Length: 401
Image 1: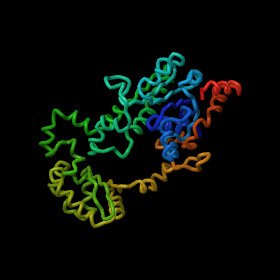
Image 2 (image 1 turned 30 degrees about the vertical axis):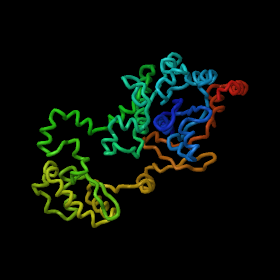
Image 3 (image 1 turned 90 degrees about the horizontal axis):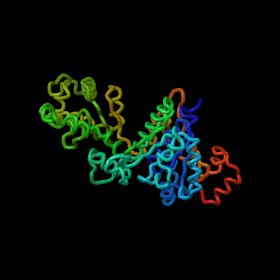
Image 4 (image 1 turned 90 degrees about the vertical axis):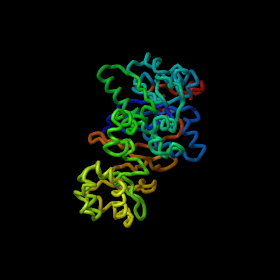
């Protein structure tokens, strides 16, 4: 069984998390991904090597070949252009203007390969007044409103959503561009702004903007603004809440009347079914404090396992709040292949994430762990470009790798 993207070749110039996550998804789907790094390795590799954490490279670089090209050298840039001619996709997430300074920007590469899909991830995209600004994950989350939405405007977020989600969107854009090329023969640039992606996920901000003309009417109905309905720590709602148990926390969602009624029966409050104070979602918002305490008093007396088992039997959506250790041994993630491992030539098996996109006919494949710097330089030059041993030797002498 072959991967859905078998036969497509991707040149991955990216570093850190966003671009590598994008190309990891393409590699999992069967694409041939050639990760191209400078002689010392890309920025994340240098950072992890210095801190003894280089195994982390495999968390976003499984299934790739690794070669070295020093694009500061003319000979290396010529090799890269030759690789572009026989490839389908280029992915980069350098600071704005970097590839253009090398003479390898989108317009220059499109001139030698009109069918090329050129994907670029930056903090603010290729257009607009902030296009030239530098950014990392935390900058995207800050300027996209995500840190404020999570109530942590004063400290770094604990998940790299800006990088990793933008990488996934870039992969999606590449697939759309490849489909367009299949129909038209023409490539194009995929322009991903991390700020765009963060805003696209900020549903609360979108609601605030869309409902601005009717905010007063909504407040009159609910007694509070809609954009604070699910996230107000001072005034939570009982049907979308994190309840403390004896030994942890459980999230409960009883958004529909049916779910709420099942919850009431489950916690031994059947008399509340049909109670006008909780009969509708508006009523449950209006009487939120009483509703929260009613559910919380039942939760406090029980363990997380007891609560989850009881609510699942009652078909009330719920789940334990898992820490890192808990999520890394979760039975469902294990059953779905998400707790995978990838072999490394010198480091043994490295735990890595599995494929989150499950296809029935062309399932994804994790592949090997991230190779060492330059492991595949000569094989790529020989097998992809057909260079001889003598030609490879000359390139080495010219400082290409």
